[in-house]
Length: 203
Ligand SMILES: NC(=O)c1ccc[n+]([C@@H]2O[C@H](COP(=O)([O-])OP(=O)(O)OC[C@H]3O[C@@H](n4cnc5c(N)ncnc54)[C@H](OP(=O)(O)O)[C@@H]3O)[C@@H](O)[C@H]2O)c1
Image (cartoon, rainbow, N blue to C red; front, side, top):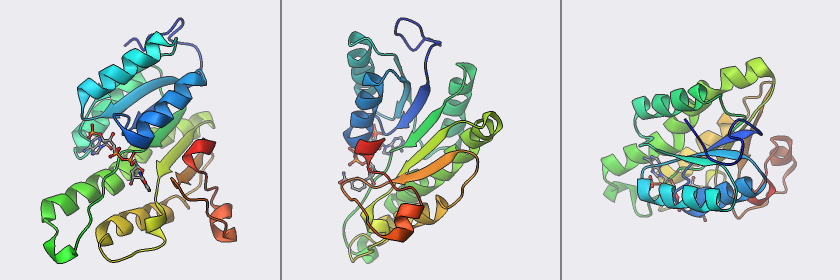
């Protein structure tokens, strides 16, 4: 499995989920500029291929891994491919979705999809990647949260609940850094500082 770049085995390696758009794509570009080799995960293969091509054209190393993270089997497939290529030093779980409206009008499939991507995929991918990082005593897992996790409000009940779950989950701390990134929000409370909260721009 070749990631491209001049020496595909050199330098740290990161897996970025949700890399087909928004914060995930921006994070991938930023990491590529820093010389980090990338596995880019999302469902839209053509977007991943386009970003991979741009990163490679700029001298970086990246590989598209199209996957639907609602599926346990797909998360395991991503992990296996990354492991076969030498493993990851960094996992950034940026994939996520929201929905606005009254919960009474929210279709259950949408709620379930949100729970699967925002919560189950974050926990499952952490379970898959954490043991090897712990063993090597080296690694970073970044899960993208939201200010909505601490400020639940009408219209985003399930979204807020998924992000509140992540807020609690990252209190888990091993010999790796497990951190919550809060886009567009710099929290100042002492409680959150203790949990090593970083904005995406600080990754
Ligand atoms: N933008 C904000 O203002 C903001 C604020 C607070 C928190 N956040 C959080 O930041 C993260 C990224 O948000 P964004 O604004 O960058 O959103 P976005 O542009 O919609 O990106 C979401 C990403 O998640 C991926 N994704 C969704 N469902 C997936 C699935 N089943 N399997 C694999 N990948 C899936 C999408 O890729 P595909 O559709 O190609 O699968 C896409 O790459 C989310 O966790 C969001 O909750 C964003």
